[in-house]
Image (cartoon, rainbow, N blue to C red; front, side, top):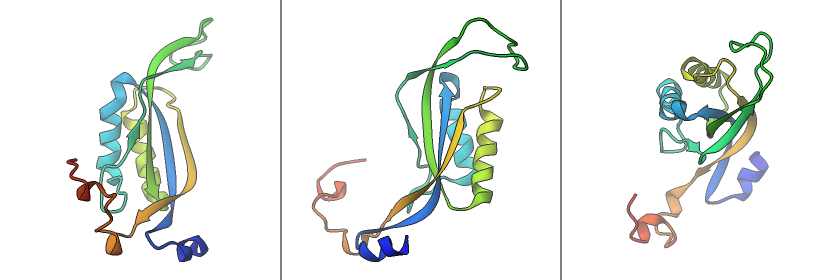
Length: 140
């Protein structure tokens, strides 16, 4: 990573964890807010940074040992995907996952964690870039 960072002038990369969580419609804001409350979800100078996909469908068939018991039919539920990154700290990652598990409505929520490199901008020499939203007259 230091070799890559040594070749970059506008950003650097930091070791991070990317977390993917499948959410039922009733979980959207509640789960995301619980993670923000637990770990902040900082990304550079921003807090509460997360991405949530548009609606999709999740499929599952409960089996023996689940709250619904063994069923013959698969269940189809509307769902979204929430993704966020946690900078390289395992303790912080654990707090984020526990926040998801505590607030998610599922017995066995789908949570996938992957090690990634996440960018961090260096705006010290880039504030005047004409492509930046603030230099193009856009509002947030």
